[in-house]
Image (cartoon, rainbow, N blue to C red; front, top):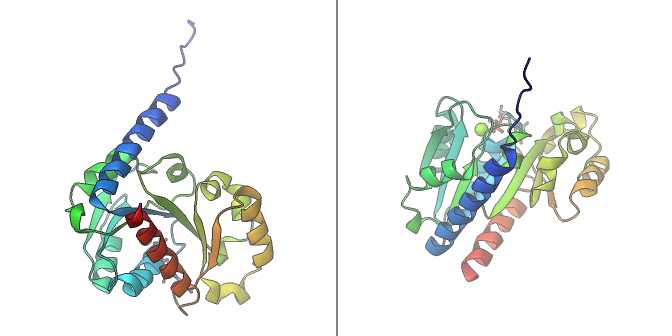
Length: 224
Ligand SMILES: Nc1nc2c(ncn2[C@@H]2O[C@H](COP(=O)(O)OP(=O)(O)O)[C@@H](O)[C@H]2O)c(=O)[nH]1
Ligand SMILES: [Mg+2]
């Protein structure tokens, strides 16, 4: 049997993506649009938390949403119904991530000139989305109380690329063996700069702080 030649394409794919992500950020900077990438495992509460926070900020900012899923437009429809902001659904062909070329094509669907804040609800997955720069200005992730306080130890890359970690479903904390101090120290061990915010879309806990962080980030981006 002849030797099989192995070609490493990972680095090329990544460097092409990184170039494209810089182009996306540059285009959005010129239009004054801030892109926020939101990642988590499926069911952590992205759609619910985003709908709630959009309702707190939509009078102050022009907001639009891009939702990524393998099939259906359930989440994009839900956010649009609950908030009234424009949304589009991206079907990414069954891939476990979205990359900058896909963001670029999706952004072209909006007249982004008139959008202050574009939110990307990424595909539910804690591995692949962390590897691809989407062109976003900030990355946030949500991990929910039922997923367990050791999640950061299992998926360190995702926790390392995020500016904010939201710990969601705080209303369920009494029903799970979730140690908040352990969760925070597990996150801190990977990413000492991340802002950690416990939230509950059900009770409203932490939602004002989440909204304030978004408003500050968008305004800071506009000043640059
Ligand atoms: N108890 C509780 N349930 C929540 C909360 N946020 C979301 N959920 C529920 O968790 C499930 C998944 O939420 P969803 O927003 O669709 O998660 P996504 O897949 O990350 O977008 C739904 O049944 C939500 O009602 C919360 O703060 N508290
Ligand atoms: Mg969702």
